[in-house]
Image (cartoon, rainbow, N blue to C red; front, side):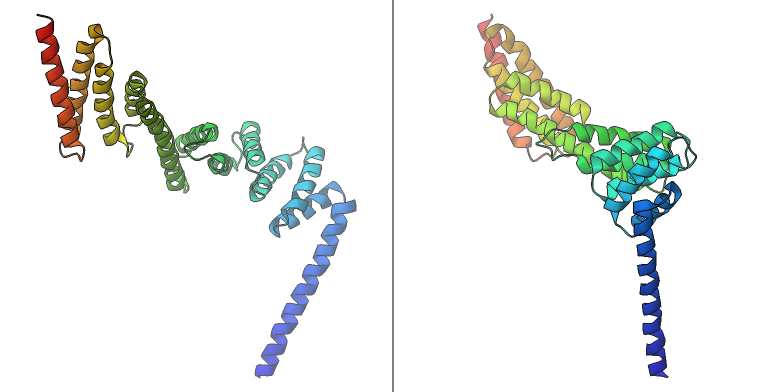
Length: 274
């Protein structure tokens, strides 16, 4: 009985492999000399079998022939998927976008919207590099979330959007810190204020608000006499906002020292101006 089962098992494998081999030969033949419909079928076959190079070439050929037919919508979507699978994300995002433009109410619009955004996400560079694709990904993800609020991909899209926002926050905060390090305190104050407006929920916000106090005091220290008073007062305002939001901050002691310094400098300036 066992031998019979083994025989059946291997016979099934042999038949399956023979059938696959025969189908493969047929598809290769259609790929070379088939009709447009046969090449279409061959492209789909290679796509299913993850031979994306062959599928891509055939899709390009068939799309040129069937541009004004009802089949073109499906071909455009499959070609974008194919390019994504080949990790050609620039091309993939372009063709997902083309699908959305040409078929705004197409049955594949939700998938195309997400995949365009995801392709941009995969092209996004680390925080220390250019963030052009980060911006594109964030915009595309937000459009997707707005248009498909009940999508099964919503949580995934939100996760990517949060990650990209934090990447942008990292770049903005590092830029502000750089201005402080090179003693361009005026720029540091400006960038830190912009950072806190743009990224109110960033994990860097506490450190940024403390650094704003340091930058404010340092800016006042190096200012001309006519600007010192107002800039020390600005630093005191930065401190008040900081302790209101972070009364138990790890930076509290240093912030209090800066506050004390700013107050003392104001008192000294007031006496000088009497």
